[in-house]
Length: 475
Image (cartoon, rainbow, N blue to C red; front, top):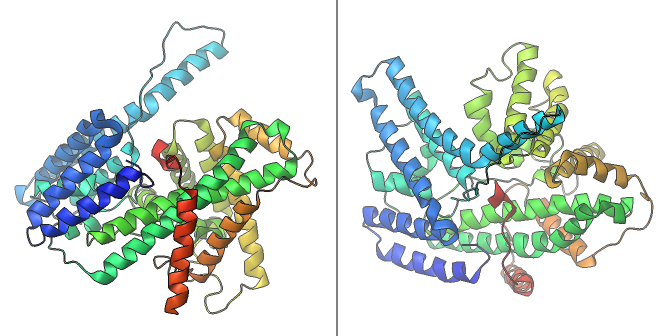
């Protein structure tokens, strides 16, 4: 079920109404969340609901076995954690990467002159498997580390794993944050619900108006780069940057806003990333739930940056390459991760990778300094260059795109004026909300605020057509 569909517009009020009618009966509320989440997910592919249930039962059982009260030895605890890792990563590896490795094995032998009589696997990728497997893994690992008391409430745990607002494309919530909310009573708060509705509206604007409008232009450029001027291809990459940002952050906004309607707070997943002044800051602001997951469960266990210089560089490449491969079974994603690693390492070696940790650009000013503006422009350019690998179907197509960008670079590009308007609205909004990205359309004067609501609603209704998938559903 798509957030931008008629079905969801009917589904959400029903879920909301029944949910608050059950107010005061926590277990029934959580059971309603589980049922609603399974209906939401099953709307796409009911046959894969068993995978969600399997992941739920395995990690719930592992959590109980890891309870310190059982007095298991370190070896036994590691074995039970291994069960969680094996099941979740095994499911993810099979459904997402088996066909990729078989095809590369066949291609490798073909390169040596041996044609193998083998059929590659055609495996349907279950929607959201990369997200909910990481979410359940965080629970098992945190219980193993002693950061979380294992849940004894299977209904609440099932709601944590399958919570429909963020089940298929995040944010990837931690059990330490979401599970306690599901295990305690919630109260309806008008302000929270109002903020949720505004987030949903703004998320729909990002998806329906910005991302979907840019999609056609981007497809034209990447499908036939030989037919376009270099200047048009440059704009194609820039518009893809806005497409993927509008698409993915729009999904996150709708997910966070929908959760607010149910009295639940989810973590931020984007914080105005295109105003970052270096790649390190970009990754603290882009897909935060994933980058922080890899930081806590891969980068830090490997030693982070508090090891020798060689190992620190190794760890950076490990986290970016694995992050790239997480996005999809294609060498283009590995190349995309590798580009970001190459851009990050110089900051690490100079000790400047954390210089923008606690502040935003032009924090107490209307406009950035010339230095900050130049740094933002450079960072955005590098991010866009890396997006070519992310968007292309193969490494060869990526290189072809770059090659054609050099032909007719200074010719007048073909421009879609509505896209310029929509992207401009998005960037202006982000700039004025860069200190508090979770309060969109925050305008002090009430008539102006309601005018903004009406205009955004008009843009969304005008842009609605056949609902299109969100980009991150494929991951």
